[in-house]
Image 1 (cartoon, one colour):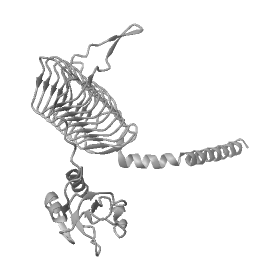
Image 2 (tube, rainbow, N blue to C red):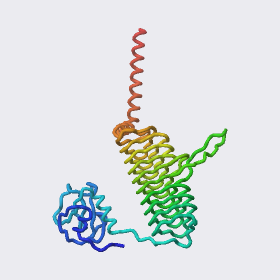
Image 3 (cartoon, rainbow, N blue to C red):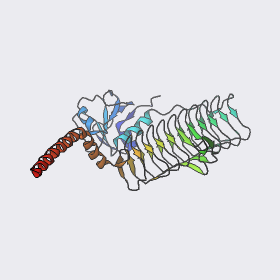
Image 4 (tube, rainbow, N blue to C red):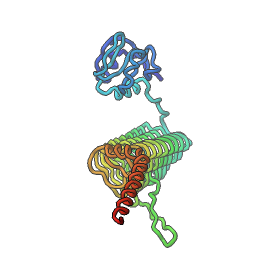
Length: 351
């Protein structure tokens, strides 16, 4: 539900920005620059959209201070326009209040500890010795295995499964159909067959982590698989047993991380990155999309390719790759010319 109208002055105070234009103009919504109309505030975070300012019909525009004001346009200047946009969007569109209480069609084991002001919907299954904090929301179909712990203000959307013994911190969000604590992929060779290695560890998710839809995070064989504070994980990601992911990381869709790998703080793994097991990636590393990380990376920077190398080197290699057919043709011609020269030289010697 849209909130009451706010003046541009109120919004500037809310995000810590400066106004150029009419500070008393009323804002009632947020929209993209192409769709915004009267009463809307929009934003410019990418320089390529600056040309659209002249034709924008929004009542106000969020922009960085280096964007020149156009006559007749109202600007809200901030250092980080995208962040200000996100905060204002949340202000005008608060999430709907969940239904409080435990639905009679939820199954709650009598030994479970349930905090205050929880929202537990139909067909939730809470097993023995589970601990649920205050203001937790469990949507329909959520499964919490024996001994699971869920911190305050955590939200688990429909059909999330958290298996036995796993720990979720405060303000964690897990989207639909994700699994926390599935068995790690461990098998010992027994002749031509495979013997399943018991997966006796857990998964520990720290505070303020968000996990997308259809993500699988495997429990440790022994010890813990750990996702540290503030990390954000996109949809369709696989994190194997005994992996450790540092704080404030970004892991984009279809990333796969093999077992026992350690990832530092503030690491970005772009879409479809694959990381082998038993290696370490240091702090502040960015891995480009579809890259394969086959060995440890300890210096911060941007890496791309398979195997991943520094991004600038990868760009040079890609430029060469496009020229390989032409280079092959030139090499064949040079080889032919050398053979002709050697043949003439041989005939001269014989005469």
